[in-house]
Structure formats: structure tokens, C-alpha cells
Length: 100
Image 1 (cartoon, one colour):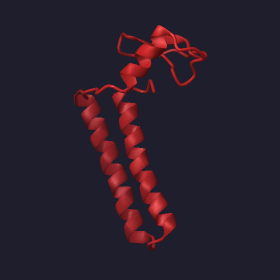
Image 2 (cartoon, helix red, strand yellow):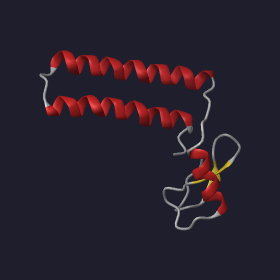
Image 3 (cartoon, one colour):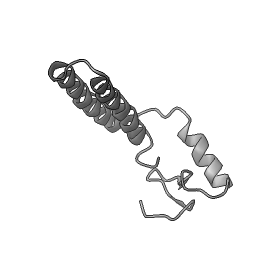
Image 4 (spheres, one colour):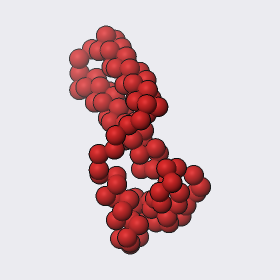
């Protein structure tokens, strides 16, 4: 996947054009398509499922270590929430193959 400037359409890695809607300056047809695609259900293939499992296990282990090592506190809660957020963001990166 090549580089792009604000709002340009580029190759998505899946053979479909992808407009970086996070940097778009106008709501073009390509940008609308990319937004719709980002919010639709995207089933995972075998490689994505394996990657998701590795990420989920790593972050679950991190959360367990935080609970086991850190006293209950608002800061520990934030650390655990960040593990959860990291899982969700990693899932999105896997799902959209790094496009979003």
C-alpha cells in the first residue's frame, strides 16, 4: 500500500480503492464508500482470526498481570480500560487490514 495525501484514494490491499476518510477534506463518493465500508461487518479470514487470537491472549495476559500486581485504584482501572481499548483498536486494525 502506497502513501497518500489528505483524502486521496489509494489501493486498499484487498484490490478495492480506499479513500482515507479520516483526512478527507470533502465528502466524495470514494470517501462515502470508505466510511460505509468501515462501519459494516467484516468477517475475518483464517489469518485474521489467528492474529486476533494472539492479540486477545496477549492483552488478557497483560490485564491479569495488572490485576495481580497493582493495587485497586482509579489508575489501575484506567490501565485495564486501556487494555480493553487496545484490544478493540487492534481488532479494527486487523479487520480493516490497516486502512483505518
